[in-house]
Length: 612
Ligand SMILES: Cc1ncc(C[n+]2csc(CCOP(=O)(O)OP(=O)(O)O)c2C)c(N)n1
Image 1 (cartoon, helix red, strand yellow):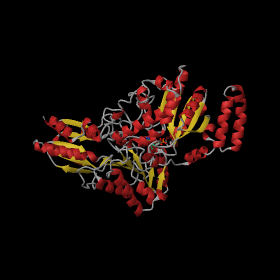
Image 2: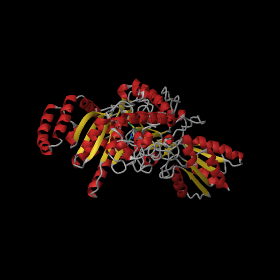
Image 3: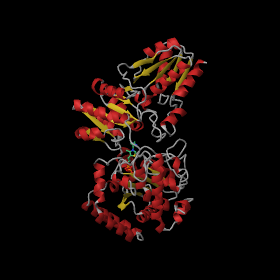
Image 4: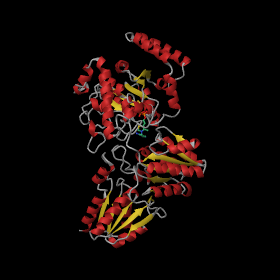
């Protein structure tokens, strides 16, 4: 019997003899590799956090204490240890386990996660709530060095350090974000890693002082003075944390001892644990970036299902071509080089490629500065992560009408990453940014044309939004005009944009066989929306169907209804197919599309219903 099978609850982990823990860690790794080889998922990150997780579960009760995993992509061992072993094969699948932490899924998941750098803030909130309510539990934030590069982490650290609240931050430092961690903070961590002499001294000192708290307090000041004189400043100490580290993040006994000590302290503690991303699985250790998030793969060889061309790759190539034509073109990413297809650009134009770390707010404000001084910055970013930058978009870019181009990747349904990553909201929030224009290509050729237009012809802020994955059957370039009548009919008006055009056209073809003819209008520029063609069509058909992979608030459908009302067009029937409130479950993109009724068959059925 496997050790993992003997774990039915928290007490079983606590009772497990210490010498069995390495075996438990091995079993957890095997399950993580086996499971993700079928479902895909965040393999390398979860492998690197196994010992940290086991040590945390030895010292803290995840159902009572609050353990917050930043991003949550490294939490697979935590899932396996908290009653989700038998459903692990459903990870990221429709109706299955989330790839991140989700309180609805388990009371052991202290807080929702998916986006980086918020764990320290949320943990501090919990610690404050605990104090105010006179409760008694520990609060721990587990955060990677990549997530620590986000500004929000520093806001959390600054507040938590000065709060005096007992709170533990475990910094899981593997030197990697998705790719290599970047920035001055990363250099500081590297410096901290090479101070073993001081660390040994500190360890011995703590041990010695353990039973003499008064002597500890007395000597603490002297020690601090010596340290500040002899060593480069440590930002954590300076912010008010008691810094412990670096320690070996794969030594489960050392981790456990440190966490036990930390639990007893009545102040903010930061434990700096050094780990190896992908630990225990050769292919992932050798190429942690490629194994950060994996598609299904062969666990024996590590070979992943071959990658196809997608919108991100087309974007990356197209932007490189534009950069070759114009030396002002720059590419900006917030730690998403591979995901946004910028690997070719970064190699070809290293001087004009800028990785901000996980710092979307900074990226937008930085682009604004570049644009103000005559450069042509393009920020490639996932729709859901751009949410972070809303204020910078309005204040720094929009009000001044600065020419910053946003390449909004993963717009619409993203599939298995689920609700935290769906690109539901970008049109809603971007269309409230002053001077913004939003384009939506339906295929690769349109992405190329719209990007070129956005970079070289447009002024002010411009967004080009495109989906995860590959183009469909539609491959024409209709990007010349803001709105294009793709099919002419008489019974109803279907308005759509982006990749959804494929489904709308298939539905229109099927409807034809049913004796129903539809105008299919493709919107190329979603905002500002040009309504003339659409209103003309509505005057004839008096029936409106909109098909959109965005939330309803701020949708094209809403704008059309406004315009129709303002122009005195009375409609016989209206059907709006969209992502509703924007909260969309995980699953295969096709499955989720069907659920949201954005597939051709549902569109056809709805149209028939409208015409009954
Ligand atoms: C706001 C935000 N931007 C980008 C991402 C995408 N993302 C997920 S994990 C990750 C890297 C995290 O690095 P680190 O915290 O060091 O964890 P590791 O994977 O190295 O263990 C990034 C950039 C995100 N989840 N949230």
